[in-house]
Length: 358
Ligand code: SF4
Image (cartoon, rainbow, N blue to C red; front, side, top):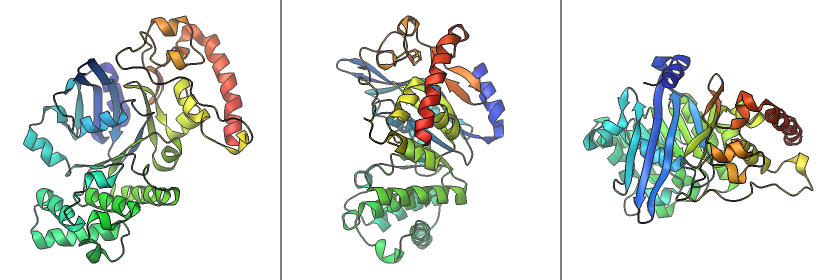
């Protein structure tokens, strides 16, 4: 165990940590070379806690989630290093039959587009009942009762009739409720929700987020939310880990990260959100694109897009710098040698936050 890991556990309270991802490396070996989709990611989640992994497409957040579920095809994928400690066991060391019991049992996943994860030729009832029979050790009648209750719990009216329907007969919002019901039916300790509202319209999005939050609070299930949307983050979780180019670049509570971003990438994400204070102004966007995975910059991976970069950033990759309890940023601005640069950053940040707040 590294010193940093020990310190993290001490702060969280050892018995409280449900999921501890330690220096995870998930690579894909393809024709053109090796894509280091997840390259040294560490974070932890307490029992009953709510954490969001945030970043643009291709930052590694979904691959991190799929790695936790061991849903990466190997080959071409490879778990090239690290540990995923869940409830005291390293998921990367479990045999196939053991991880199958964890998947859908202790850990459930809700995907972005339920149509791709629900079986189109089975009724939703049969799909929930199948999962319950596999994980709960009850008979058919008991499984049916659990399935009905699961639909009632997610606010589905006329649950018995709904169980007899096929996915194509349901709306997008209803299908997502069914996915959440299926996830909950086995009393998981952790729900991983990967962009659960991206495919839904705005009003249904809000209902589904409220539902996830209400159920999570009622059952004490921990939530790992994967999203690119900082608005969703603000409404749903307590803690945030921002990812960029396969790395965690900033961590903190929601308030810390959204009100005082310590990494220029997080700041760029915030600057691109519309607000009343920016009315009439052109919305800003982070310049450039995410780096080509085969030609990663040598130093800071955000350097080609960063408005605050200087030579040190291009030459050397910054470490994840501790800024306080569970507060970190992977940026040279927080190295004491560059305090004058940090002062400039802080001054311009104060102006931005005034605009965001108005
Ligand atoms: Fe920008 Fe340099 Fe910080 Fe990277 S290390 S985010 S390039 S200021």
